[in-house]
Amino acid sequence: MSAVLYDAPGPRSRRRTAIGSVIAGLAVLGVLALVVLQLADQGQFEMELWSPWIDPTDESFTAVWDLIAEAGINTLLAAALSMAFSLVIGTLLALSRITAARWYRWAIVGVIELLRGIPVVIAIFFAARVLPQFGVDLPTLWYLVIGLTAYNSVIIAEIVRAGINSLPTGQREAAQSIGLRRSQVLGYVLLPQAFRVMLPALISQLVVVLKDTSLGFIISYEETVNTAGIIIQNLRNPIQTYLIIALLFIVVNYALSKFAVYLERRLSRGKKGVSKKAEEAAMTETGAAGA
Image (cartoon, rainbow, N blue to C red; front, side):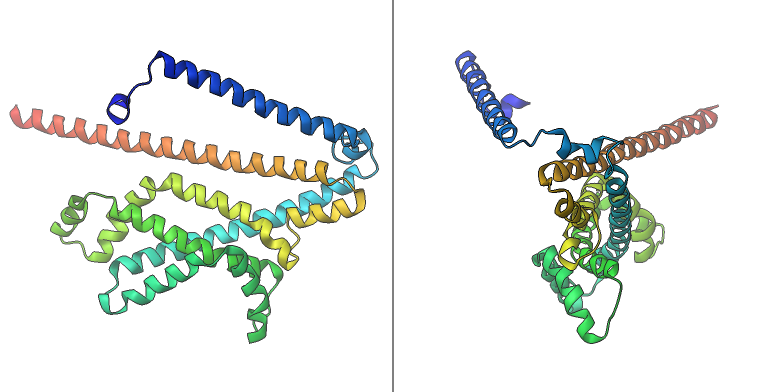
């Protein structure tokens, strides 16, 4: 298959590629070594900078991790609310765009394209600064949720719409042939399959929602990154603090990605199991009819 897409490299090309990879790898290692040496010269590996994070006997250890635990809860709360609202609103937008008549479909498309073109940080800032001017006074958490939902719901709407459009037209025609209404075709036949098809893309977008909660610092929401800034002001260890925060985000996002893979495989196995049972039942009925 690969030879159809491009010419297979010969021995000389493979040798050049291997040499180039080795040179690039050595260059990266050289840069990393230079960075480590510079950090060592600046005393960034001294224990007093790391002990508030890794040494339980340090007087700041408990206070630091208590702050991070509270900030982590705030981050997960904002992410969970934004994910839930984005999924619901995004699905409704996708269905509205598909089923809308031509004379008002332009309004739905206009809203989707407008929100897609606005940076998420502006959406959050707009929610926190403009809504209070109209008397909408809410806790800071909800301004962050509104901004994240406004941006991510339209992204999810396009993902769901693409999933529905990717399904074979025979699915829709078969459902309509047995008398299902248009709403029933979408809700019972097309939408469940679209979610299964687009599950990896949906989970990836939810990971983006989790990472975007760090933008809450611009409205002083006490999430993980904003709390890290407060810790840095007191401990004067920005490299160590941001490295720990980055590792925490990596662990959580990696767990979500692995969950997406597991869920996709589980659904695929379930679909294969149902198909196999249906095939066995059909063969049984055929055998009984023949007898």
